[in-house]
Length: 254
Ligand code: 4AZ
Image 1 (cartoon, protein in one colour):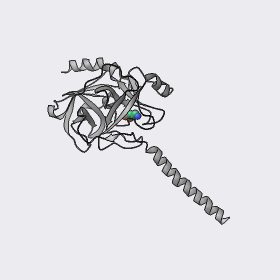
Image 2: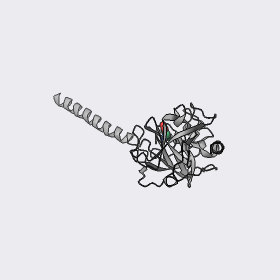
Image 3: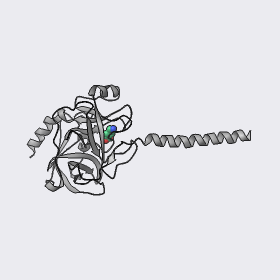
Image 4: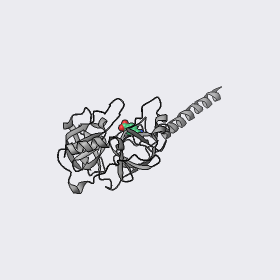
């Protein structure tokens, strides 16, 4: 009887220990990237709001940043800062305020449709401190491997990365992505999807940052159901569909 009780207790302990290890493994489902140790993506910028890191972005020219609308919509522009020429959160790099934040009337905060914003900086970033990225006017074929960079969570319930991270993810066809998100969210014609299911994906904090395909920016990190889940790819704003809006803003604000 007493021996039985000991056995049960031991089994219970084993159950909890194994359970703990197993759940730790499951949540260790990192986004699957690697640290960027050289300043090789010098179009990448961080957006800080009220002194805290909030989102990524990319430099289209010395005074214009492309990011996601949901990163800036409703925020007080005076508390927004753009940090260029840095790959560590602790390094402020070159800091600029924002003069204008432009979001299209087509943006929908509930569905994240048309999730794009252009920020015009208070003054230009010096030419030695950045490179600009060109936008891809054509839709990217599914299966294409694209680069995503950011300081976002390295796992779904994680925390931001001190060092900038990079990951390569294949583009998933819109039709396949729509099937996966059936019932949970609408993948519109302004969105594109990418991930290595269960392994590589963008995550919280990567929003607004660039997706680079064949050397041009084809997407903006926008949203997703969790991070690196087997069923749900990451969702990106499809640059080829919102290109006109960006062009117009850049012309209007030289
Ligand atoms: C976010 O909350 C977020 N797995 C960005 C990308 C993804 C999920 C969430 C894609 O900013």
